[in-house]
Image (tube, rainbow, N blue to C red; front, side, top):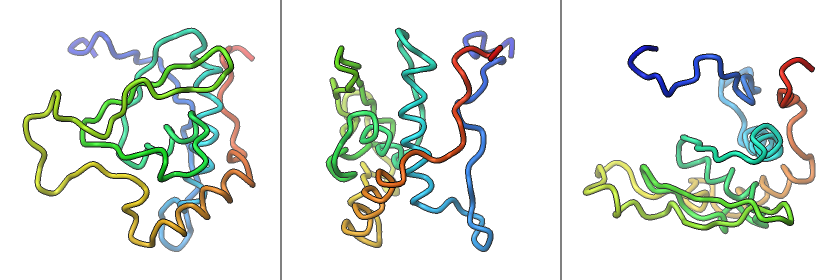
Amino acid sequence: LPYFPEVDASYVPLQSTFSTDSQTGKEPRLEYLRRTLRLAEGLPKRFAGQTIACYSHAASVALVGALTRSPTLCEAGTFAPCGIYKLVLAEDGVWHIAARGDNNSAHISQNSPTTFPWGWQHVRHGRDEVESLWARAHELGPSDAACPSTNESE
């Protein structure tokens, strides 16, 4: 990695596995949401007191919802292509949105015609199904796979 010295080649991901449906090979939405809840628990533990940057796709606006304890996925908002959310952890342990990522016009001159700010309200199956899955994910809690320890020797 001599071309990218800022990349930590020793980094161990918080989550390296996820479940897939044996017939479709895809991760079920419910399991994705539960894994997102697990990530929301693991991030502040592993990176306590640090500034972190996460890069992902628009569906990860669910992580914004999980961190901010949004009662609904749709309230978490939308994520623009190359959108930037800034979340700040308050002393009470709750994350707050300091800047939303639903608008990218400050740093993107033009979006591709095939991409647009996306949120869970845009899912083909509708808002009711999405919110039902979000509620069910919270009932079941984070997925069972443990987040790696903050101390690699444990």
